[in-house]
Length: 296
Image (cartoon, rainbow, N blue to C red; front, side, top):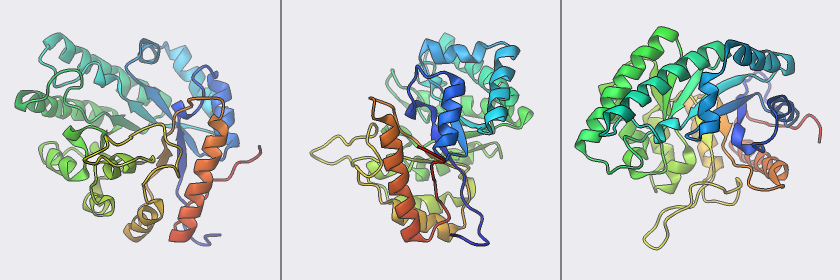
């Protein structure tokens, strides 16, 4: 279909599959649906944070499963810092932020994960101010040095809250943290939801984007709070055709991840619908992306 062109690789977010599904089954399902990799979630729940304390036997056991089924864990969504933010006024919480970061980098190194997506929050359950902002910057500088030592990329997500909801804001942050291991992980749904010009934003950060979340959203307006999650791609207002055209013109080949959540028994059908919508948008944009299930 795209002769002599390098196709995009596309992954699926772990939470798009039922949480109770065993890891081997998750990997088999992701492979059968035509994905190139999975993105593991380390969120603020005790269950998922506990993964950072797995033994080497558990970690390398999962890595062997990935090799067996030829579906790597290419990236990690590390949202545990929402509970333990670097910008917190509480020194104990800030120490926990460092501990979680060190564990996450070590976990990623052993599993072969290349990119750790960081939540772009200075704080989440506290009020943000100039002090939380500066502590966040200090925490990111420290984190980047830990990542450099391990050769694991840190990439800040463009978020669903006002603090870091555009790549323009990331570029200002990036000036403070010039490390080659501190980059951007835009979520096109979040950028769109906050009414930024998504195409201009992507072009602005062309040299700093290492991975992209594909998610549909509804925009914030004077009369609506917007909707930043739980939409199936095609139900929101994100213009994926225009986004794919922009990525084509930028000659971008960074990995893409479909971010969805398995809310009910229709999770598989929702993923197939998202694939269909994205394939059609890519075809209209003449963009080298095509996700095809191996079998149903």
